[in-house]
Length: 285
Ligand code: PAF
Image (cartoon, rainbow, N blue to C red; front, side, top):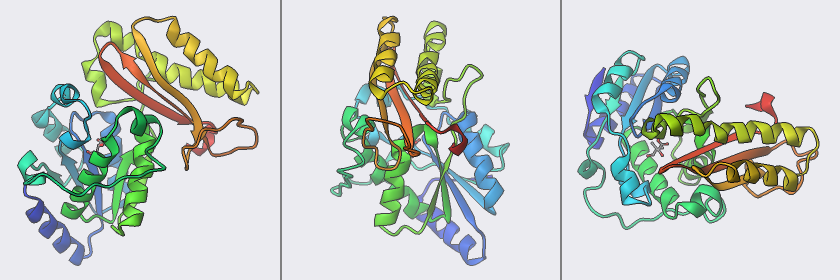
């Protein structure tokens, strides 16, 4: 496994591999790798000849300096995991490699970013779009793999790639969960033992809400019951729970005969912010 830091060198390598007829799969990450990331690498290996994983903690997508500084940075451990997972190149640029000067360009998604993560983390998706554009220039892959835990991000990246003709196919991979249901996330590493046991409320709320909706409860009743569950636990804070169309992200008022519904949740356990989502129709996940 090779480690490349220069975006220009990386692009040259990928383009020459492409000329040789290799099919490139790309897994962009911010490091602190867990089973969810390794599943993305596994999926990439299944359908591509050559797998590139990037590790870059992108400051422009953090809307809080403290959150950026506290984001776990574990490069050596990450590289060890990747070397055992079949990754061929780790692209690990420095901050100045990626941002040699302050960018002027700004990419926005007025429809897709107006709710949920876009609403509660102003500037987040501009930062994601900018860095993913830069990453796709450095790694012009045939396919790029992203986890469905960040579903709004998946939609935004699909739109970015379509609007700017990147020519990379975006593949979304189902969320990998801990045995109790908690979605795997690099942020889970920051939870204390007590917080870790409380964090299950996010996935539990989603699965309970899905059951209620499928049993015929209304959207209003379901939202109220999730809010009540959070109100009973002072250590956790609900930021949003939304039932929305999973392509447009518009809230839905009734789930009857609607096959594109997803449930989305975000909030805090102590100082750690967690997000999760599931499709209403389980079999489509
Ligand atoms: O999902 C992530 O880890 C990041 O948002 C991404 C796509 C690597 C961009 O920094």
